[in-house]
Image (cartoon, rainbow, N blue to C red; front, side, top):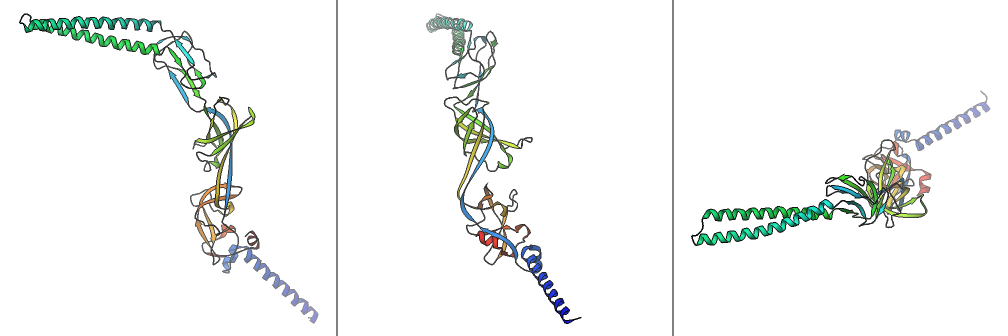
Length: 372
């Protein structure tokens, strides 16, 4: 081989060796598994834990529902004369809902009043008889049997008075219930009786919905169930009122997930003093959850974020990665609130953490250093 050929061959070999060396260094610097084989530091990207304000907006569409339902039942058995309301009517407290025929009740009331008066007169007479026979017996002019009969008659008269008094009170109470008036400001949800029908005791005749406060039943996607909390503020808009936004707060949360829509229901309480919001009205709720000045990390840094053992790799001062369990709060724009397990300024691994093992030695890449 000529000398020039040998020189070219050596140069090519050197270049190939240099290329292999650079490739190996690159693999060690970018592949955690290869770095671990040669006991080199694993390449990762890190960011420090920072305090910031996170605001999450949770949206859900739904319809208005009455705050509660009032069931009105009859207290008498009588024929209905008048039902001046229909389904959907807005009623005020004290408005007439149902009126019954009171003629039989009036007759019963008068009869019992007379019975009471008669019983009182009879008691007076029987009391005089007892006093007379008692005086005669004391003078040894009467017999014990006559006195006993008089006492029995007095007891019977008192019993009749008690029965008459009960009947009178019942008639008076029934007379108070011949008119049913609304106990609340609300809306008529159901009317279960009509004129000329005869009702019986404890029969439901009217269903009212309370409307001074209403509930917006917002359907929220299931991944937000852990973000929802009672008392969160909300803004609700309705197509029926395009220029207005109604304020409310989360009143109740249904923990059950609809298997078809994969949503759960959050009930937002809204003040409705003018009764404009009626059951069935559709709208959209924007529920706000804010965490002010809280430690947060990029969501990609969290291992097993939806499980019971959420954790992150923290790089200590010696350059080693340690797995640490953390508590999680709200998630906003790829940032997650950390409620426990980390301190402000600690560095967490955001890239390469899935291949790390406990106590691995790591080094941050240039991108991570720029992020810091």
